[in-house]
Image (tube, rainbow, N blue to C red; front, side, top):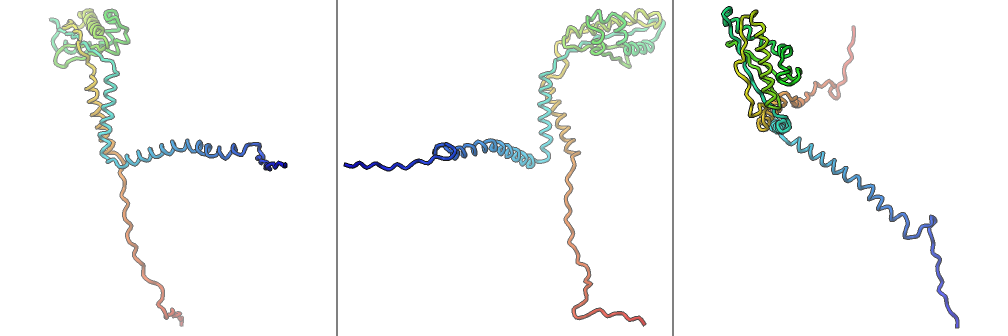
Length: 261
């Protein structure tokens, strides 16, 4: 008996040593997909920008005013919520004329004392009575005088209402002390007419008020920007051109030369 053996064809291997099924052909789609992956977000971002520009162009011109008002309301609300509330306390000082003086002199000295109140506070004991440094007194204490009455109002502002009261009374007390020392020369008496009262509510604007003021300011700025914006000039339509006179000679007629006799 003879046995037949099946002829086996030798398998061909690629030159790079890789198997037929594991070539680089399978890696090409993956590489192409990985290369195209970053392009999709870029295209999406470009489309979003183009759509936003198109939407802005479609908006009417007057939309700047309400947008600015809304922005102002937001800014005012943030300011009102973040800012520290401040309290104000006011003390009053009265200048009275003596027997050797008259009301007009008292009114003049009241104006003079009101102008030099900061210097009096530095030279006197205001910083000791108020318990705050001199720089704070200069920055947070203001004085005002009346043209009709010889009275000086001393107003102090601080985040703590008790500190505001102490500063106002301290400066008023320094004014009284300085006026008493100069009474023989000025012939007027300086008296503390009213002490400061501890405030119960802050004088700084609340959040709704700050939002209202911010909205008004934003709307006003938007309207001004709308008024001063450069306007587009309309392109004038070109006028139709008018043909010039014909200068070519008629057909069959040649120009005659001129003869000089």
